[in-house]
Image (cartoon, rainbow, N blue to C red; front, top):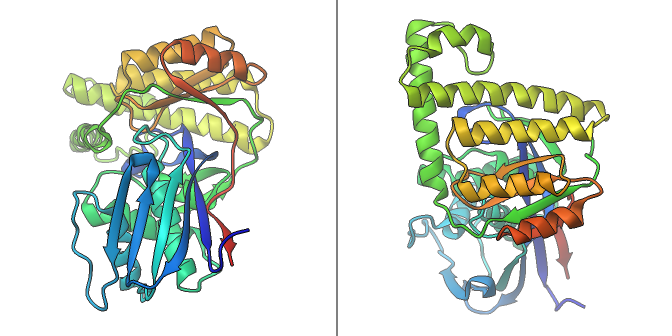
Length: 363
């Protein structure tokens, strides 16, 4: 049984099926929450502060409760203090300290949204500690995006926060007004694998965004009607030829990935998923991420190939790239594919689509 006044909250990681490197451009994505989760358990303490134990990182953090004003940031990306500040601006100032333990089964810094799951779970914990037993998922996602992205001027989008807050398989429109649509479930068959190669998420995202936006701006000078959301690839090809190679390659890849998403979304939305076609779409998305955007790595490419050789229908990197995770779709062959990915030097997990943030215990 939990201790008196225990609060336990968990939030999921996610895979991005379609739309990788597109949410921060305002393009839509299809993402799914997964059953690798970040959990926060806390009990009240007499001292006016939060003591946060993070055994997975062999770290402990103490955060004082300010009676007024905002907490100064002590790290480059101080998401935990930022969440407290963001809530305080909304009139939800913590009044009681807690001893908390943070645990996660989500690969850390590997493209599966571990930091966003932590931020969503932490905000939900703080709201529960303030007595908020009910919480609007999209509003929570917006708060988390403010704390993790906007507060520090980072290049990421809101996909991760919406996935963690709402769960399931989602079509997310990332332009304002941001909204999401729940899609039918996809038959089980996913295998996630960490390449165990670390990456620098913000640098990879910033470079991708910079090159694409520069290419889009150049295209609009030649063709004022050009729109990354709507202009057909065939219509854009004539103008793409005049761009510098790096910009041409990346803008073209985004247009192709945009169209892959449309086909993938329509198939999932219909409730009639063709595993072979879904796999082929994922693999083509990977090709564009690797050859077009240049965000894959030789090891990730080898892991996708090894998964397909072991019976997967297809696969792709997951997250910003430059290392981190990939996933494969391998209905009926999950064990064989997981073994092949381990043999390729990764750490594999058979996963399923899961629900969003959960308030699991308040007692």
